[in-house]
Picture (tube, rainbow, N blue to C red):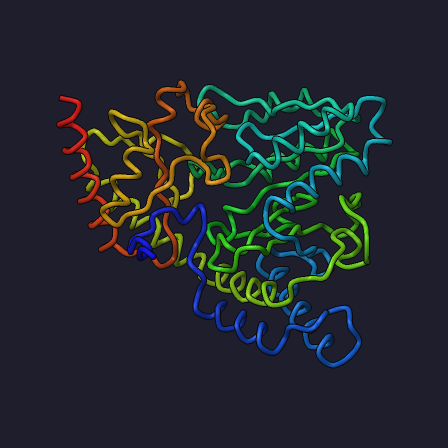
Length: 386
């Protein structure tokens, strides 16, 4: 089996498991593998591990511990929020309740909203201004008593744009009394200081593997009093919202990863700024960063010259450098993403966009190696272009 590339600049897709999270995961697999619903000692030990993980995730996002509903990841958490909240509020919002979603949501939110449209909901995208940023004043006209749900991601997964979710939530509260406000915070945990109450939302989604935790674990975090319809039925696990035996080892590791992401957030924000500056100073001249106002430093989108970014991706991988091309969940799609369309790109230009993203473990030396590899590929592909 080939060795993994030594330099990973695709942290927005996933991150390497932290040693601390791995240690907890292995210990739980060895000793904490009981069914958390069992009443004997082994089950009690697994339940205690989940309870501790719930406390850790709650502290990391400024929420009440009873509001944490564990899921298999961000996709399930977002789907549960969008479908579960909209359906729970439909009866109070008139004959055709309205759902509003952000201009550049993850595919799991957009496809859940499309499912609601099939069920008779009126589904509309929140308006944006000429720069692709959320237009809050224009959004006011869409908010009324028929609004059942408003969902807007906090940090975009493709270009890192930060949306004004708190300001949007305040407007929703004033104009749409029955609405549930949800935010996809999968790319925000560990990058921004998160506080459910300060955001003013009813729910937010987070995922373990974006913050050096294990794949297969996430959470939907709910404000006290939020009501959702479950998407599946069975036992009473996770407040009856997500039945089935919980994966105690994965969740225990997620709890540790969430704590570290929260604790290290200020330091990572500073590191990401240094890495981004270092990257931009050393880029080949014709590799242009996309201009994205109000974005996190740890996600940098580049428009590369010549062939599609996937060609660059393969050439860079051959040199030991991994980069992203669009969202990992939508790779393979030939459609222009709403994110890139909102930045004014057409389909041809959109295929030239690559995403470089940093983790807490990324170093300046790795940026040096990556930019040198970019320069080599630029010369090689430039020679082919003539």
